[in-house]
Amino acid sequence: MHELTFTITNLTCDACIKLSTIALRKLPGVTDASVELTTGATRVVSTEPISSSDVAEALKAKGYTVAF
Image 1 (cartoon, one colour):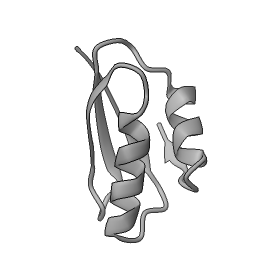
Image 2 (spheres, helix red, strand yellow):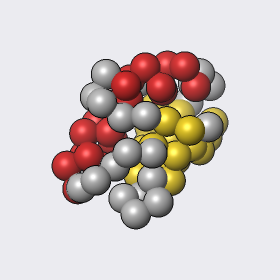
Image 3 (tube, one colour):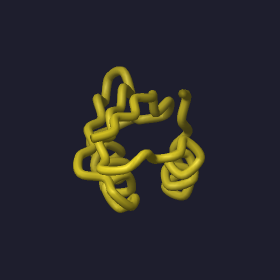
Image 4 (cartoon, one colour):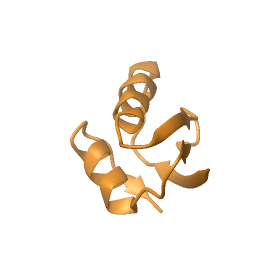
């Protein structure tokens, strides 16, 4: 198992959590993703390493920014 933690910097509501989580779970190998609304703290667990650029692109497509 591989784990990647980072912060999504522009979350404003529960819908943001849902949309960002869905986008992260669509990445290849992702088995779990969790996002904290108040802090933006995000944890992604996968069966293979995930590049930070893939994460950033997936979230950017939904309108979110990421800080690693």
